[in-house]
Image 1 (cartoon, rainbow, N blue to C red):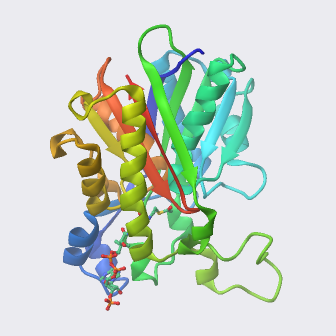
Image 2 (spheres, helix red, strand yellow):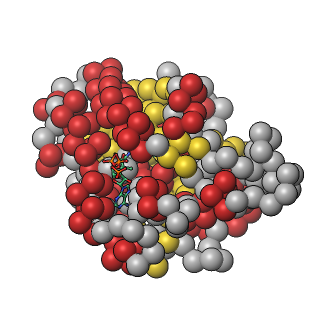
Length: 327
Ligand code: ACO
């Protein structure tokens, strides 16, 4: 089977920064609580007129540039998101239009924070079968649009960002060596948005309460599952790829909580200096988290040709997944 590799990576974060001290003025919280319980210091928030697709287009431009491709070279766009511009059409259609990627098929993936890794796995399968040549995979969120800024349990966690990766067939030893995806729909009520679907459609039964249109999370329960499943998934793909803990150059985990990341690193057996962290600057950007971190790690020289990388993410659904990559 043909292996897929990432030949271009890019990301975008909005200009506006929301700090912990800004949040102290909005809800009953403290800089000390947020840092000690999560590791987050600030997060970026998109402008009112800035849609998820706008952030994706900026991320895609950098990825195309790195890959040396034009928009029209893209055969398929896959977008992992829970915050598309519209319920219909898809985010990937909006990206196609704004980017001018007129030769592409499009699809969205709803797997919360694990959306990018799900997209990567689907792209890899299409490349392996020779169905598509150049696939643009996004993880992108405007979480501020579904965050309840009256709820201190969630509003301190989330930020906005987009990340993009271009995959094509590998002609050398590099590429995606193994992937793993898993879900447990029985844990649906640990992390959800009540309104907007068929169960509680907009426009019926009078007006919605604002909180019904925003993320609700039972953080403590989610935390326990995240610690277990992120570690297991990352260890599993590393083993399948033939990576020993020593041969892993960088673990790039979903940036939801520094304590979850510490537990994941311990389970995989990699020392702290081999873990990529940017949670303090961006918080939890859901599907954007892993591609944003990957892009920054590449730009900072922490990922080079031949590096052995493990990426792993976990989110609402519950959904989780991981991939082992030789860069
Ligand atoms: N400031 C101050 N106090 C707070 C805040 C806050 N922002 N938020 C909660 N607290 C309080 C709670 O009310 C509670 O007080 P109480 O004991 O008087 O009731 C206390 O702090 C402890 O609350 P916990 O929820 O037990 O705190 P915990 O240590 O679990 O940290 C957190 C909460 C940070 C949310 C953590 O549980 C977590 O990171 N969970 C996982 C999140 C995650 O990975 N989500 C998946 C991805 S998100 C997605 O898919 C979109």
